[in-house]
Image (tube, rainbow, N blue to C red; front, side, top):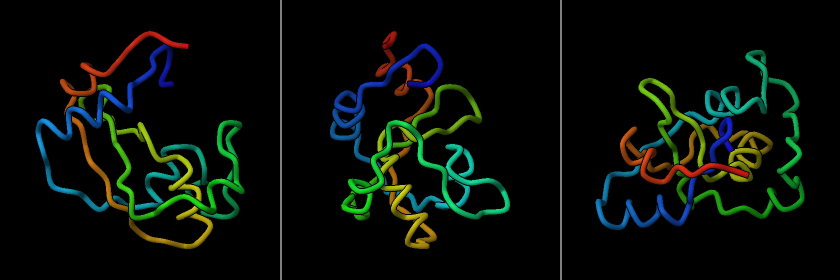
Length: 113
């Protein structure tokens, strides 16, 4: 959830299938700071309530993240929190990701919870 909204991962995958795009490599440190997993100084990652550390360590780091743009200039992780957590723990520098546009993000937005 981002604010009062949920975003459909299935809907995002459908958009990516309909409108293929290149994979991007995202900076794990920047994404982790943005997600609140790390402070700017790095250190030990925080474990959000919805991230199971044991499961995260089995997450497939080759599976692309889905990055959403809920507004101009704002990019957030829509799918892949466990992968980012594992990448931080293992010291990975980059992960593959698909980026949805602001318009595509709006298309997959619903009211939560």
